[in-house]
Amino acid sequence: MASETDHVESVRALRQLRRMRTFYAGGAVLWATSAASAGWDDPGGRPMWVSVAFLVVFAVLLGLTALWLRRRRADRVEEPVHHAAPRRTAWRRHASA
Image 1: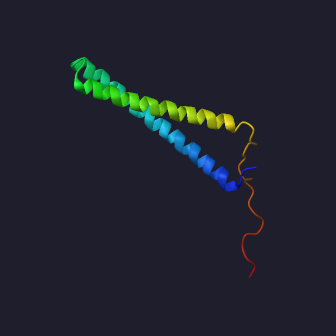
Image 2: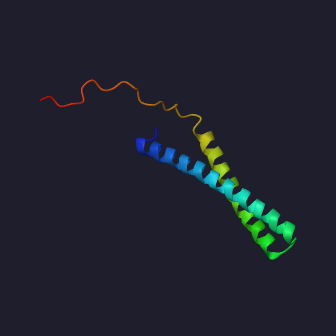
Image 3: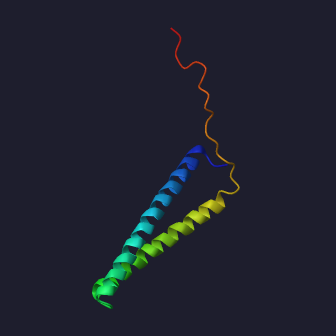
C-alpha cells in the first residue's frame, strides 16, 4: 500500500499533468492558426514552416501528456476510491480553561 505522501504527490502530479495538457492544447491551437494564416499569406514561406514546426512540438507534447494521463488512470483502477473527510466538526477543539 502506498504511503500518504505518495498519494498526495500522485494527486499533485495528475493535477499538474491536466494543467499542462490544457496549456499544450492551447499552444497547438495557436500554432495551427498561425500556420494556416502564414500559409495563406505566403505558402511554403519560412514563417509558415516555423509555425508548423511549433505546431508539431506542441502536438507531440500534448500527445505525450494525454498518454501519461491515460496510463495513470489505468494504474489507479485498482486503488480504493478516496472520499472526502466527513463534514461534521470535532466535538471539542478548544482547550479547557
